[in-house]
Length: 607
Image (cartoon, rainbow, N blue to C red; front, side, top):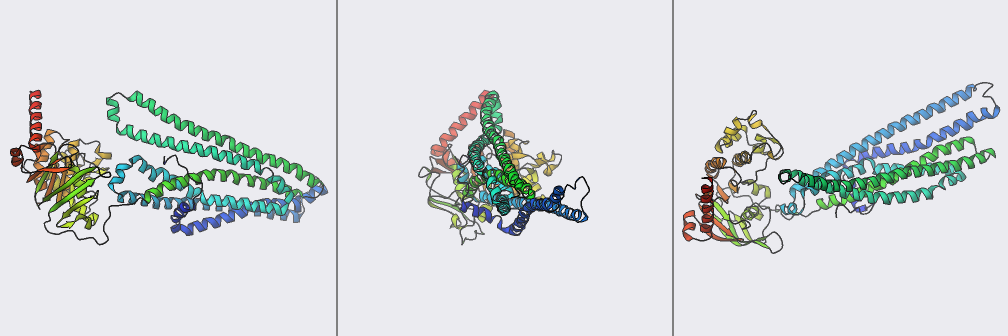
């Protein structure tokens, strides 16, 4: 629906916000407007120079029949030479003004769009995680790319050009009225037809533009989904079906664009025809007036030149209207993103994070992602400094939610979460999250190098720290096999590395940042047995001296935890050591029995 909406062609509120991005460059814009004014005046000068040359120098000679008898007199030669040089000067200065205005506005547009993209990126980084749960990534990328490009077209060739076209049209019509009101009336007689044609064209192109934009959005969404899921697509032999579906989406775009091409195809010839029709009327009426000596030949020639200058701005304005309408729709979407309220913020008077050993406490915590569909129900526990706590439970029990709340990715509805006795909502967000390192089930690597993925922008992490962290998590042996070692390149999402290798890099990243609190969220569930053994050996180095929370499905990886929390349907149902929970024969014992039987079955099958 957002892609389909075009909205008003002009919205003063949105335009004021857009122009605010031009404000830092107002001097450049002012120079562009001065150049535009000068260029508009020069558009008037050319025909007037032609009129003067004909009426003052060429017409008297023609009337005297001196073309065949002899050349121009010295005075006529001088006058025509001066007018020719003046005309050349006008053309040259007009070219310079046109170039200067275009260059300056294009440059200003790029600066303004740089600022807008910067604000959008900053906003995206500031938004709550819940916002990204509701909005597809493709839509957000479109806001920063396609929508900003539409606004750039408005800044670079829209606003000032519209002003220039209006100024030139006004100056030309005013000058023509001063030369001959009657001739001006004949020229403007074709205007109603031109205006009707422009209105029909504008509506046709608006509909076509909306359809094209919707089709582009569908193509982007389809491509993103199917390229990301290419392995599944090929596994289930859906290539032919996918091509057919894409052909249908692509055909929508082609048909919509063809309608736009058709509209442009008939619009310019019709306006050109109206212009030629007006010129024909000028020729007939003007010739009659010249014959009766009521009008000079120079004025008639000047009117022909002015006539071409009248219809060209009308063509440009009709096209700029579509740019303006598209820009208003794009700005509506962009500012909607920028105006999105952020609920999770750093408090104005934040507390400093405790320097000493600080316990983590959940105090009767209730939380729901949507309304009162509670994911956590009255959860209370305390993690002492230095403890290694394991959290287990069925899928959807609320295990990962605990860590999301601890990092303030979401805020709770009831209760409190405290560190060192202070509610985490009293801490600055960056200060709170700086105390934690997290290793996820699906390790995420950024484009760059192995070293940059471990350092992750923290300049204090030296090469020696990176190498030491890699050694402790058993990553060093793998890195030693690479041609460029820690400078080895990493492509998007680390596609050239195995899941286990990416997981070891994530472990090294966590250790290199030397956090006070460590979170391992299913960190070993998607790796092979050999890599799991390496990670188990690294866990001792990771958890030593810091408070750790380990979320795991594989119960074999958390049996040495200080305590094990068993989550079930959003509640903390059991707590204790492995031996205590097995002896209690409760939920944990059932989980252990199921997993133990699965392991026995797997061993039997392999045998």
